[in-house]
Image (cartoon, rainbow, N blue to C red):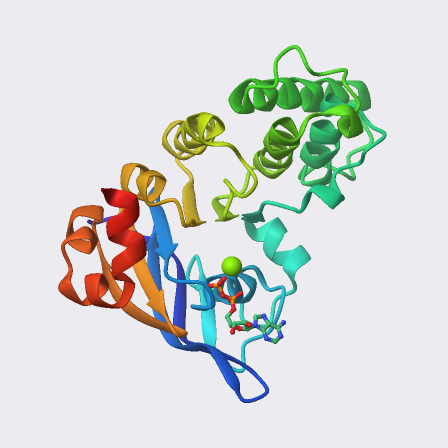
Length: 256
Ligand SMILES: Nc1ncnc2c1ncn2[C@@H]1O[C@H](COP(=O)(O)OP(=O)(O)O)[C@@H](O)[C@H]1O
Ligand SMILES: [Mg+2]
């Protein structure tokens, strides 16, 4: 695949006391791909995410984004550079409507916060953007519902909408199907695909639902005990004997 590398982990490690949660991981994620990270519980997937989004500093190693070393860059700054992470539901403003939540996200990332001219135009532009995002995540008709009154599945959509409204180049999804029923999963897959394909974005997806991972990913990295065990296309990973040995029950069970 010839796409440029968008984000890269170089010999990244993270220790919590004596426990090495991420152990010398090197990883390249290429532009316009959906790159899944899978592995058993405790493999270090979420910790790796935290290192990429800057939520915690690595013990050693570097993170390179668009060719720049961002290892020391704060999460807020990384967000402005184009790294979007789906926020927890608690970061939704419960007493604002769906539209307002998404508009605020678009506005917060707006490049023209300081331009006081054409304020009304800017406002309109953010509403347009919010409405477009509402279409992408399938919340049409729900614009005026207060966030706190949304059922769980729609809260997850709003959470995605808030991330998408920030127009990140890289979207990080950590178990986006958590708490979703099986019927809701295809919806979510389509949203992620739409965002990546039609907007030319890149996504890193940590997910344990193998059917979803296999159908949506271009590249899969398998982690085990903090390390990268294997990397390849869904087909390669499903047929990798090493992966099957380490990860047998789960992978087979869910693929079957
Ligand atoms: N903040 C933390 N403090 C101490 N240990 C942690 C912390 N976060 C994760 N761990 C430990 O690091 C290991 C990897 O965890 P995690 O990255 O959450 O794995 P995964 O997301 O693959 O399930 C686990 O043993 C976990 O208990
Ligand atoms: Mg995790």
